[in-house]
Length: 129
Length: 423
Image (cartoon, rainbow over all chains, first blue to last red; front, side):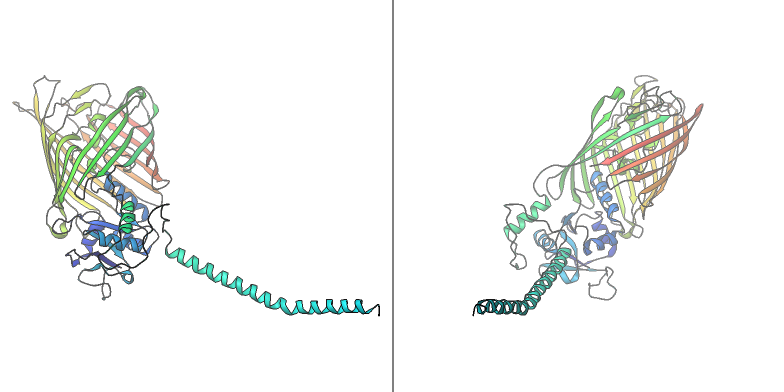
């Protein structure tokens, strides 16, 4: 599972803890202040399963977590759930602060793959395999 | 000769039958081949559907996204429009609602926490508690508005409207997030974690020390002013800060629900630090100090005292376990007098999820000095236990039994049933 951002995003590497904080809405800005724009896949997809595994939550826990987050004012809205990798790709191209999880074989031109703990998805020891 | 037509007809009939027998197998084969092809196509469609299971149909009249591959950095206007519509980028208000229906019974008829529509003198009755409407609206990537409007049941099934929160929020970056308006004070953990939505919390009610001031709670739970929060660069420690400056005006009923005390609060300052360490997601350890000045109108219209509230909390919420622990010290120091009251309070609550059911146990303690503005609370402590059952992601039913020991009064037992929902 690859972590992809907009090509203009200067981020090259994230720790797994930072990645978790990003998709948990704890970290809301990239270095430099660019707001993070979260895009996730709708339930029933491999990318969704990978997200839940990263956050160590069930689908119900995930929904309640984000309801609480918005209610507390800790997030403007839940992460946008997209129904296809194509829309996810368009979102990455459209928003400079966008970040998403995609299967490595679905990475397309225009998506920049970020290393996690210094490793690329096709390297041994990649933490999101 | 007269037999020749008959013989010819018979010969023709036999010939046609033989011809039919010759063509039937090829038609059957063709039919079988067609059926096989249909089955293969059905299988392919099922495979494609499973791969794109959630793909929505475009709205009638909407521009169809182009199937032509685009070069990196180039998107068609139609694709952007379709994406923006799904992203709800149009300015507007997003609504969420939270409600509850309660039944509460006590083993006494003397009013206790006679609010929420609980009828004074009644052993038990139904009430609706707070009907909570959360409105949020995105202005841009950094600015947004949040508003929480609560319709709360009061005496005699009348309802009052309260603007619990109205905030203009601006997130400059992760280190500076600002809120301006009416907020729930960041004294400790519970007030900011659960606000007014009972659906969010495990138990049917809030710990007494964290009860809203308008419902008899001892703390100044709401204020108008500015609230800042953000991350302090600290690596894996996950250090955060909270700082508030505002005006609270606590009008607090006695626990018998009869007397109202307006504390005439001065402006307050509240500062806090908490950590959320990366290695243990769900853990939060923190502390806060709150200070303002209030009045003790029972002693005289000009009697003022400094109110300082210290908090320490250790909470964990993860892997289906919720473990909340908060301790408070409420200090009232009268101006121009050596009179000082130090009133401790704490609660500890643990629960664990087993499928749809979450049993819980809570123990709480609060000791308010006689002669203080909180003397109606006195010393009370005791356990609560029960369970929350989640019918779905939005509907929960809670059953809670309370046993409260009160100084100088009989023990109080209560049953609280609650249907809480989000929509």
